[in-house]
Image 1 (cartoon, rainbow, N blue to C red):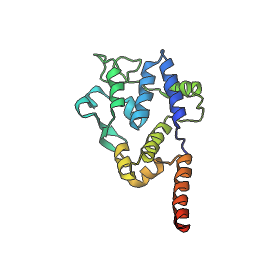
Image 2: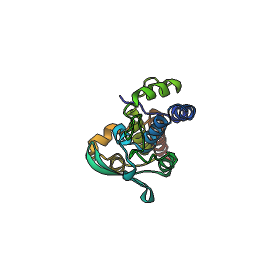
Image 3: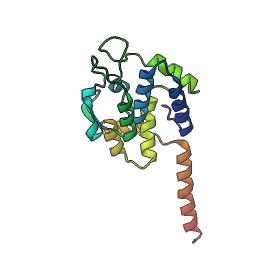
Image 4: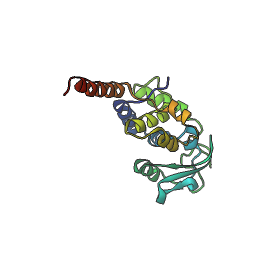
Length: 185
């Protein structure tokens, strides 16, 4: 089962990202993955021409499910605005080769997650966490599916995992309400 990050785990990732000065491109990519729910390839191949600052959206011409528009929040926009734009490179997350994008994020991610104490978290789990957080905040599966670019709600249901502590809290609230009714309170 995919891992969903808790707040303290996201904080540890954030602290680690602030410390990795030798790989800013990887840090920007990880931040964008966490903040947008995008797939790895979508962030790796994101071009400046796909970023629409005035609408806070990414217009991706070729994602896993075809062309799509991704609405992004202000935090993600701020990350994008902080990335230096290279004149000779169309990509937001640049690679080592002139005019190319960062092709390997797995190696930096292993280093980041190890430093954050999250050895079992995969890059794709950041997408699951985004969906779970959206569900936890009250977004329904249709909305989350739109946010992730899913065409089938069954796919979204696989992504949106409720965090165990919230299930426990919700279960307790429901049972307390029913119990009060049973007792005539």
